[in-house]
Length: 144
Image (cartoon, rainbow, N blue to C red; front, top):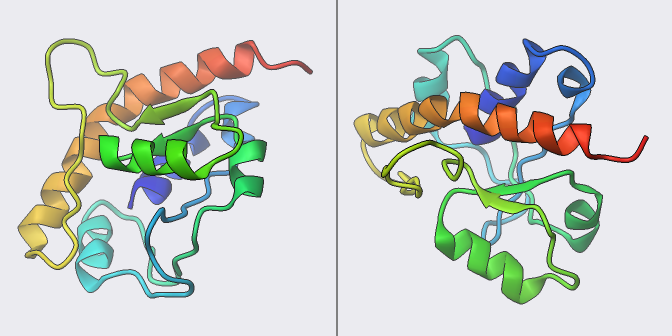
């Protein structure tokens, strides 16, 4: 869900943000697993279709080539820090850039009812503007 929402948000931005490729990868999931039905339903309600998405594990090559690596929880960040060599310097939480004293983690709704998937989606949507601003900052500092 996060990758589809972020890719959609970036599509509305000027270049070079519009051309950023968003890749979804799991720190603990399988290879080729289908997206859950509730993920599909939660995003369908906001006009996005992820029915063709399949899981893939995060690789060092992905990490090395990423402008930013974004996780949902501190546990995700820790797993990447433990497994990666080198650890990506731009390793963040999806909600890390929201102003104020708000929850920074997004709980994994896996296996839960649709309302949990919708809550996770809404937490991601709330964070998108601040995340896009941060990516814009990273792009501005990236060598040509």
